[in-house]
Image 1 (cartoon, rainbow, N blue to C red):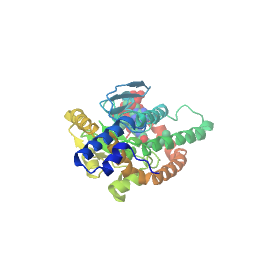
Image 2: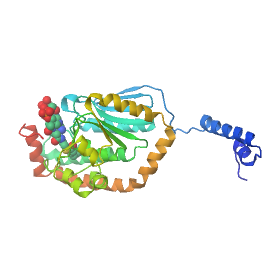
Image 3: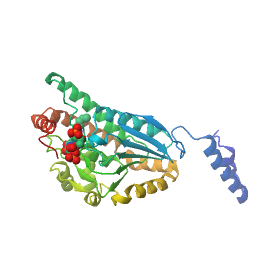
Image 4: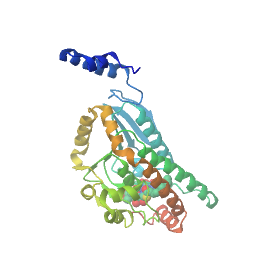
Length: 307
Ligand SMILES: CCCCCC/C=C/C(=O)SCCNC(=O)CCNC(=O)[C@H](O)C(C)(C)COP(=O)(O)OP(=O)(O)OC[C@H]1O[C@@H](n2cnc3c(N)ncnc32)[C@H](O)[C@@H]1OP(=O)(O)O
């Protein structure tokens, strides 16, 4: 026989409105007190700090903040930082926070992939290094695709390369009016990653996506907002105050409802995004070994070229 809990049974069969109302209250409180599973979140008041080499991660008022922390290198993402972001996202996906925020320390949001990553290795080692890095990139991008609760980018300054493409997998993007958005892949002999070959045409239409991803047009924050990549732009002098007040208000919404609604909106696309990510990484693996790319990296390292 099908078994229903006492408050629910009372609710279903009770003829008296008053008793029914009380039973409903009992049911709701029994659900919230006893059956909160580990995958459900409740807004936490915890504040914790885990040590990373290249990130500062804090949790407060239901918001976990992951701050890229290599300001002297414009927050360029090196191998260790990729791995730390993967770990920080994993931890944030399981913590009590309602929202997770990515931001940068200093004047840049992020200058993209660390172009010195391939320096100091021999010609014989390069193929293996590229393969390992691309395996890591695939896991990195998948951790954005899989992230179970709203992931918000607080873009405090210029963003380059992978720091821009990954925004297409974020759920909201708030930008300072000082921020710019630049994907100079062709300039570097590279090709799009972060699922941008799929998300950007969806967000802004193919012609505008090609202007960015193929021809490397750098956008202002207002232009990125007009194209739908950025949710809202704030004046730089009030940026932090306004954005954090907004996020604090959002973090007070019912946590499970927010998380489930994000998943309903995003989950439908997951399989497609995994496939796009795998294809982009496979194309990029060849690109990274091309003369076009090696020459661009050498030019940057020998200080002959920057953006
Ligand atoms: C894991 C798999 C591989 C994935 C590959 C896919 C690629 C994705 C991408 O992200 S492509 C984009 C790569 N990024 C760039 O091309 C930016 C390169 N940097 C610049 O052009 C400039 O540094 C700048 C415009 C970002 C800033 O210029 P400026 O304001 O004049 O500052 P500096 O150039 O003096 O920079 C200060 C300091 O930071 C170092 N730095 C900046 N960006 C990077 C970077 N991307 N990689 C490594 N280092 C970077 C710069 O060299 C300076 O260091 P120094 O003080 O000289 O030690």
